[in-house]
Length: 208
Length: 227
Image (tube, rainbow over all chains, first blue to last red; front, side):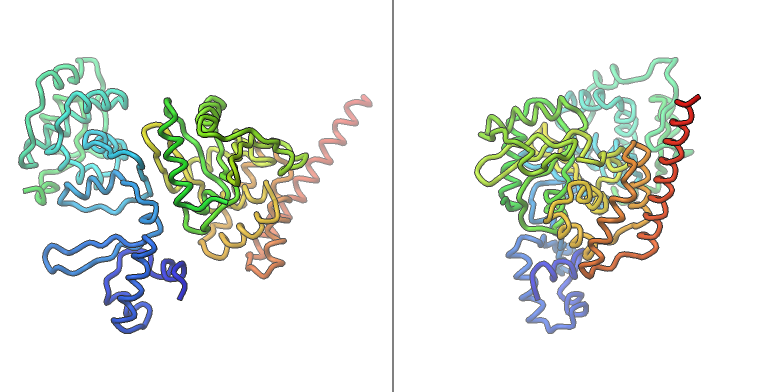
């Protein structure tokens, strides 16, 4: 079977057993197919932390190398997300600050929730502030930080200067993080930043 | 000819040369390579939505060693030709919004499925496979038919969206879009690739309506002149 055809038939997440089942071949042949796909650069191998089983993420995009924001989120978060679209970066590694801003801009509940873990990794608060300001989401970043401080362990303290320059003035209207989505919880934080928080306390159980 | 690995290196080199953030859209063979549908391409087809972005890109490739070449050698007398730059056997075709008879519409920009960032300043968005077919129909060179055939055979095509995009092109003033796309798909069908008959019928019906409209408008114009 040609490598391109193999790629097309096996694209997605596979295990050796699923390949055996899908292609109706024996274990030896399935292992050989994995070897060929890996040699062509189409495979990224993941290992289950509990069972030790190997999972193969098979995609043409693996050949292009590069790194995606979703890779960084998945590296640091207990919530794993499947990228809804291909977004790859070459020639540089995006910072955690940049990745957090990207996640908030996606306006996707699961992506933002997974990215809350990045607050543990923020070293450069000034970079975060400048990126947030560029994208007009300083208040969203500040409100989510307050939520992260309550629910995500080991989140470092934000410099007072950040909140001082980001807090809204009295005449500022309320804004959404995810359009149309607001929770009844975290009212105080919401009122402080004039932001509707889209999460409930139960959403953060995986972070504890 | 350029293969995917070399193309990646080249785009990264350009990305590192550019000093201001720009966005470009890959179409044609380049977009097919990003989708894993092709191993190599003759030319790197890129569409820009701003002249300023194209100028910045051209400055960067000139620094790498690319030289301007005459586009009529490849595109003949067709309208909206790209600016072409080549180095050895590699070539850039750099379009500005219009790709020959078709426009790279806002809907096409919304449909992009991949974004690739090279360095800090070069963002390349990859056109959706069905939009690549439309663009292939516009350029209509010998190899374009083969490429479109490959897309249809390997990808799930939303035929209604394809007709819808032709309608968008008509709205933009490309009155022959229905006919051109219908004719292009019919040519592909003749090579043995399955194209839904209802899509072809729909395109030719719409094409007929468009021709009638055109004739009526011409009559109105003549009558108006007599009065």
